Length: 171
Image 1 (cartoon, rainbow, N blue to C red):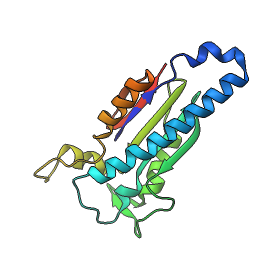
Image 2: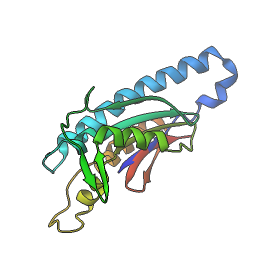
Image 3: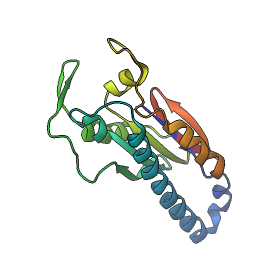
Image 4: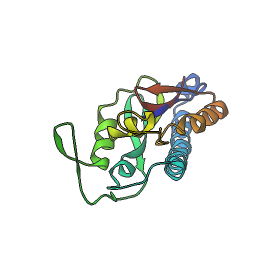
């Protein structure tokens, strides 16, 4: 679950300017990385569920794609916090960190620059939507939409949803 921000509206007009273009891309990546860290940390602080195994926490992450290639990614912590894996719908040994890494590795970017924010454990969407035996909806990553929308307004990008996940993009 997450959002995608597409950004970088004027940059490609300057592509022929070589060094300027490369410096601009580096600066955009640095800014988006800081924003990615800020957004996933704020979402984790604003969550309304209780951590049990910490696998959902480990599955929070952000990833920056430039020309459909991963250039940088980050997580809530440098190393996973969960001490045990989960079983989910017949699959065993699922961990949050491996799930988010797999999500980013299999994600197909569509725009020149994208910042993707996600919480990738499969039950995150169930918590967020209050499905099954749950008596309420929990805040997992949906808060990223407003945060990315504000960033999109500042950088001339736009926000799109990804089947339960979020991303910021701009073209």
